[in-house]
Length: 205
Picture 1 (cartoon, rainbow, N blue to C red):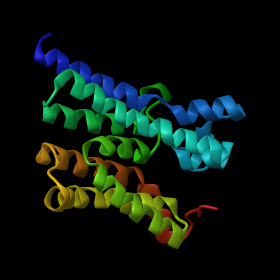
Picture 2: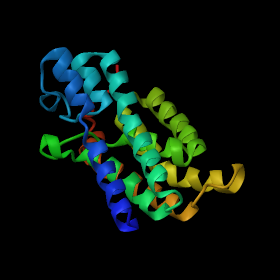
Picture 3: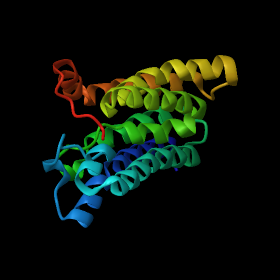
Picture 4: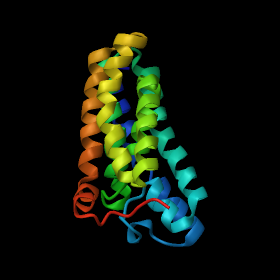
């Protein structure tokens, strides 16, 4: 198969995988409701928990993370060490989750899918960002603030993993994916940032 065709297949597959609206489907199956009409309107785990319970939220979290894992594994199995194409797949699976074609480009905020991506690309960085996320949420009860802070630290922790723990494969492509992925996730939280500044953001119970 021609290399450009393989790259195209990987990139399209990443976006389509990211677009699978697990949160929407779970809420529709369990509660007969449209998750986009609840809370923030997002299809992510936090909003699903509000509408269909914490079990549904955990299931959504796992499935959304698996989308990120699958996109990277599919990419590497087809392209091997074609690292910049894998960067594209990482960005597109997150973008697909945020802007799914099936739901009029209204999806989630990309956090769980991003976690899945970097569990494959830089697992130590995800572990450190997870600690930051838990600390912020426990201290403030704001899941959105924890997500924003954790996303912002991913590029730093990728760099630290490479320098202090062990080499990160294809450092610069991975760093590029980390920076763009973090920027997308923070952009998706722009409404939350505004509510945090106004003191009207909902706290996790």
